[in-house]
Length: 448
Image 1 (tube, rainbow, N blue to C red):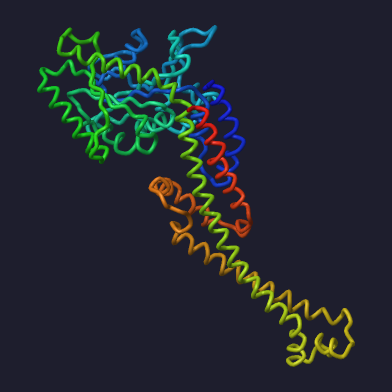
Image 2 (spheres, rainbow, N blue to C red; image 1 turned 180 degrees about the vertical axis):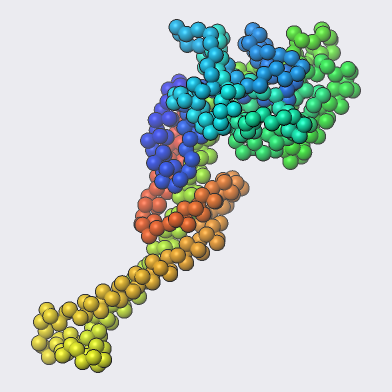
């Protein structure tokens, strides 16, 4: 399987098939579009002294990033290989956010302070031709540290959306006690990436004085993670250290294999790229399906109500057609010969139809006014008051997706028009379900 070719095919197909539907239902397509644009990404985050830059330098095989016990780098730095005919250089954030071939256009909204702390390094590293590593500023305690000048967690969330792997690193001295770390694990990462893409690492264990100290630090990290994730089960935690920075020790050598497994997992990120793209497409198209399904249900309710009004208008219209002349004759003395009388006496002429058609038109107008000014707004109010009834929430997965798009549906209902009562939503729902059941499943089959 040619993953690059498949990714390009996905980008073309999704753009042509689904983009009009995302626009029609006012759903943000930019996340999906950004994911499809570029290469696999590994985001490395953690406390400021957790060894992020040291791990990156070790993977690359050169001292590219500055390292140290105190904060040494206040920028989000993307590391990737330079192309043929190019050379090592640093590309500033202002260029990155304005390059339409890169997935960083959304970052412009984070402001100039962020852009000045964002850059890309093109380096001589062949394995980075098909992936990129992102080194990040160390997480700080927001209570005691000065403001960064930009929304760090918002930036972290945007990078997490793009990343195929997020490596979250801790050290034994600050096992998850930093305020920004808590916010990232509790809110930012769950909202922007899948749990299967997050790798937890307890690094620098060589700084523990003895085994008891290591066990105590590991237990503290497990406890903090359970509090931050809100879950009883603890995710896998890689326990490791930087061999070049530690004193040789037989007790530590047992953890070297864990270090190699971590590096192998990071370098295998490109293998999961297409699968992650399909997961994101699957999730966002299922969100689109829920919005369309809700509007389809609303449309059906509106048509049923309109059909009831139409039946009443038909009966009342027929009555008005034949009786309007008789009523007017009794009230004001005109016309001299109503339609019914003319038909019974055989004196019918086309002129006898003027008043009957006027009566029919009046009934139809009043019925339409009734529907558009009272019945239709009432249906909108009823749907907005019971939006959970508009969709089938038979699984926890659909309930979770519905919680994300329910407000979007509410806004669409608020501005709904009579034209929404046509069959367009049903046709769109059929297209979406066909894509999920056939086309998307076909792509999944290609990567198995």
